[in-house]
Image (cartoon, rainbow, N blue to C red; front, side, top):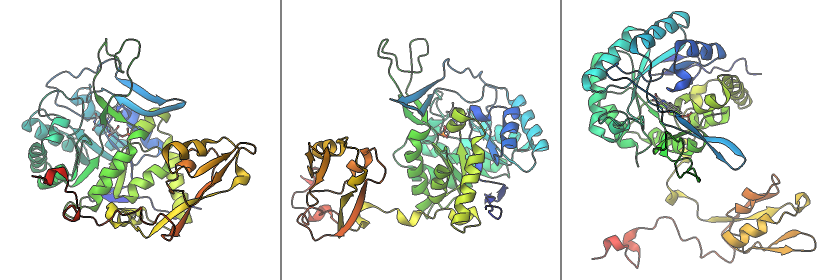
Length: 430
Ligand SMILES: Cc1cc2nc3c(=O)[nH]c(=O)nc-3n(C[C@H](O)[C@H](O)[C@H](O)COP(=O)(O)O)c2cc1C
C-alpha cells in the first residue's frame, strides 16, 4: 500500500532518508548503540552531548525517576543526568566508525562548551571527525556551572555569541537546541538566528518535580537524601513541545527549519509535530520505555496514513496545521453547541451526571430507576467534560448550532479591547 511514499527530507540542505532521529541522551550514548538504532531504521542521530574533557562528568545516582499516575505507567520521566561522561576521543572515534559504516545516515554532534574557545574546539573536532551537522546544547537543565546548558538558553546574548563562534569555525549546518524553561521561545531563537544558526530544535526537558517521597519527604530521584528540580520528558511534555514548535513555525521573522522534540512515541505524535512545522523529529523517552524498534511502527503508520491521504512526500505535510492555529479573538462566536447522548450505549455509571453537576451547567438530571441521564439541552454548555469521562466511546458527541438559544447573551468574548471596558484593569488605574 505504501511503496511510493517518500519519507526522505532535506533539513538544512542535508538529506535524511527519513526524518526520525535519536535525540541527544542515553539512547545515543555510544557508536555501538547508535549503529543498532540505524539497523532498526532510524534516519540519523544527535549524539549524546560532547564536552572537552576539562572537568570529569559524574552522573548522580540514581539519575532518573519514572512518573506514574495511578494505573497510567511511565507517562513522564524525570532525570538529573549530565552530558556525556565518556571522553572526547572515544566519542570522536565512534563518529568515524559510524560515518564509515553508515554513510547514508545523518550524524549530528551535540556539543556544550564551558567557554567560548571550547565551543569552537568541540565544533571543529566534530566536523573533522565526520559530523554532518552540529546541535548546540543551550538547554540542559542540570548544568550548575554558570555559562553552560540552560544558563545559556536563558541568557539570550550568550546564545548569539556562542552560535556566532561556532558558525565562524565550521562549514557544516548548526542547530541551536532551546530550553522550554522560558516563557517565550521566539526571542532566544531569533538570537540564535542572529548568531548564524541554520535551524532550531526544541524542546529539551521541562523543569519539574515528578514525585515527593511521602515517608522520607525527599523528592525523587532520591540521591542520598537530596533531590533537585530537574528535567521532565515523555508524553506529559508533548503539549509544551507542540506549542513552542508551532509558535516558531508561525514566526515569519524566524523562518528557520525546525526539529521537533518532546514526548513523541507514535506515528501520530510525530505527524503532529510535522504538521506544526517540524521537518525532523527527535526521540528519547519512548525509546527508553520501548527500545529502538518503535521506529518500524512510526514509519509504517506514517506511510499508511500518507497513502490513504494520497500524499507522497512527507515535506508536503510540514506546517499544514499552522494556518489553523490563531489567537482566541479569531474564534467563531456565532456558533455554540450542545451534546447528543446515544443512550442505547449507556452503561449507567452516572459519571456524566456527577461532572455536569459539579463542574459544568447542571444540565443533567438522573433517572434513578433506569440509571440513565436526562439532558436539558438548553442548559448544556457544550464544554464536553461529560464526553471526556464517559467510559463508552462516541456515546456523547458534540452538536454545533447557531446562536439562537436562550443563553445567547453568554459568549461576549472576542475582539474586546481594554480601552472599551467600563471597569479599567487594575494596571491602568491611577
Ligand atoms: C536521561 C536523559 C538524558 C538527556 N541528556 C541530554 C543531553 O545530553 N543533551 C541534550 O541536548 N539533551 C538531553 N536530553 C534531552 C532529550 O534529548 C530530549 O530533548 C528530551 O528528553 C525530550 O524528548 P523526549 O520526550 O522524547 O524524551 C536528555 C534526556 C533524558 C531523558
